Image (cartoon, rainbow, N blue to C red):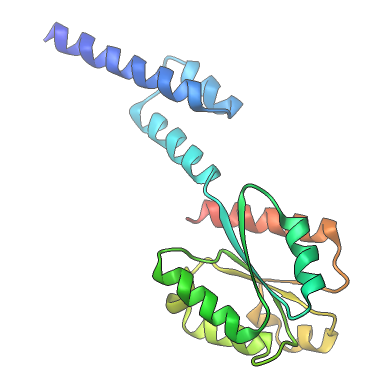
Length: 185
């Protein structure tokens, strides 16, 4: 029995060293150094690390290519996977396509005035049939310079960014939404 305990302790120490060498978070390393760590604490640390590096899928929908390029440049980050479409119907098609292969859009930036289907119409379809398009934690950001649209349809969107874009506002909203998404995955 003593040998079993010793073997178990060696395995735990090996696991602690393995996790310690792969964790970059300072507070997690301090927890690993302490002698009061539990198996559940190790699991929590490993789960947190896995979530921290899961990319956020962002879909940008705007018929003006310059706008999509600006947003893409602002959002470009190794933690993001960015998809671009140019009308409301393409939004629905892309989200369904990704859903079929087990991926979900986490954040949707969508313009209002686009050909084939306006942004708010696409958003209404997504909100009514969420399970066909993404997870329940989907965040939708309106990108338009039409104040009357924003007021009239505010319940459809989580946030609004007016054109021309403010880099700081886009980055701040995205950070907040990413944190919320990761905490609820």
